[in-house]
Image (cartoon, rainbow, N blue to C red; front, side, top):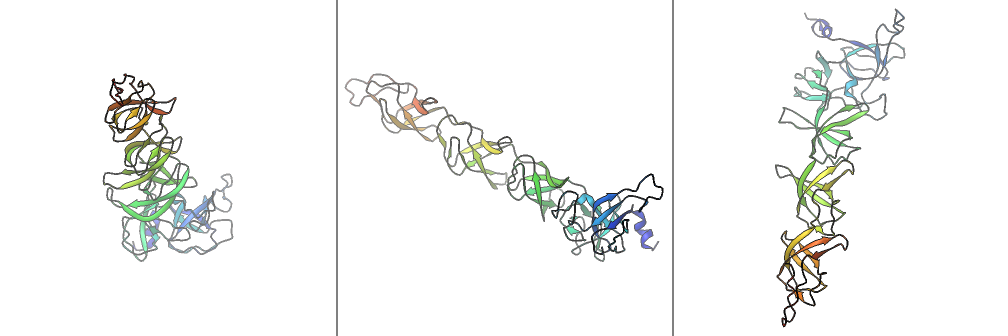
Length: 367
């Protein structure tokens, strides 16, 4: 068999289309089906066509839903070896097919070593581009043509920027052998209706109704990292998480559980989770309520001083229980609790009378 149709084209389930692009469509081109027409089943002659046909345009030039130059890979068809001129007639004037089962030849916009790569359309071109999505290139190029088969999504992607829930963001397509994929060099603007995606997070994306959309993400619900600035009660601060390879990802964490007016100093290691209701990362640990540490200065009756707690942080503590005019000496180990009514740390036990003749006295606090 030497005839092209016998060797190749007769294996393909062709459908008819009408060239609505206003241009002559070259052979082996990608066309977008923007609308389908169905002949009246009650009319045995089928009107202008005996079978369903579609209106075909250049990828990105039209869509059911949007004027944006987006290309839905599921509406793409490939024309045959003949050019298709524009027409003003109501009926079809060309043939095209989708290689869902049997491969088809399509024009490639670059040369050669494209076998086994993903390929897809680009807005404003009749040819296939490597690194995009929608088709798998099955063999090496011959005369600028490659055999392809459709590859439905979802596709593997990596967030190129922080993408909050309910927003669009850039996602890089990754292609190649499973487990050894690399950046395909093509970026898709995807809508995210799920949790937050940080820079570098993996996801799966696909075309959903009117555009590209993240359909599954791998963002951790809980992360561990270090503050890179002070985090106070009810405030936010920069925070860095680290993956298994030591790569750091900056995020912002919020303190919402704190009951006292203390702070987490820069460098503190904390756990945080992403709250889908508040759309933010929130620290899991509440600020401490009871502390124990060593007085850094004398604590007088009714006064205040500082202690260095067992966690290494310095707190201000207040004496409110009375030392009968005495004091607690610097270096004394004491315990204090945070009083929500007065919004301060208060020494838990005090009140022992000062030793007679002791000068500044020793209140015996901290028992």
